[in-house]
Length: 358
Image (cartoon, rainbow, N blue to C red; front, side, top):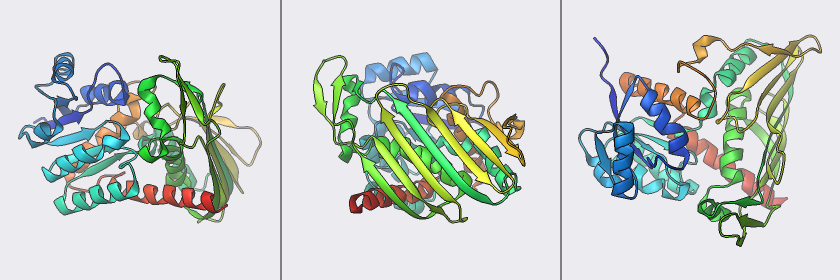
């Protein structure tokens, strides 16, 4: 007998713009585990439109009505970071399982309140750190555990994205560092988490967090706006496994070089790379053992939970939904979850504090 699908509601289900339209809505619609039962936007007209296009039975303009509905089992919160708190807390209070995008909260205090509420309610939680389910990075972690490069001596990670000087006005709200959505929290958060999930934690580090572009051009209004959000993060230190490590995440005006993670050990070398952040695009691997020729590594199918192409932004979100469903059905702890998010929130705080002391 077929397993009954989990009835999912998505907060932030605008089909015309935003992260949900590029990822969650596509992944949920293709999921064999979830039924996209409800959609919520800030206007009933856009919610009704999303419901028609996506085949959802329920449409809401108020997240409180959606999370209270008896035909919703789980909720995904896919809205701007400053708006994560209220729908996440409402869903938890209603006893729903919750998937919230990273960062969990606008700050660590908000994130802690959500995590405490989830523990009190005993529900499954998932945090949107999608690089943890990248087939390439899961395989890479296995290879390292098996000793592919031997004892890790050094690693170097970089993500350099372009387009820092201008953006449309609906995205310039991110210029305010206090709103919690910037290079330090988002691009650096995802890249750093990918590194630590594969190679382990920092035991010690120093950091520089800088705002190099203190003005942005709004491409539609042609206005210049002041910026306080950081656009470069540099971390240098030592990992718990003894390796020396460096990380540079930055937003530059033109021709960013994409994502690279390199690790050098006594027995070999690996390189993981993609054109954009590790949670967004397909990552490719190259490796060398006791030689200087890097060769492409094929990713085993067992790491690919989602069928079809591995290209594009919905893929890793689909991988996450597979894990989310497994946890809901089995009762085993979901991974990555809100506790994972708290660890990363605290680490980001330490990086910011270390930079202010330097």
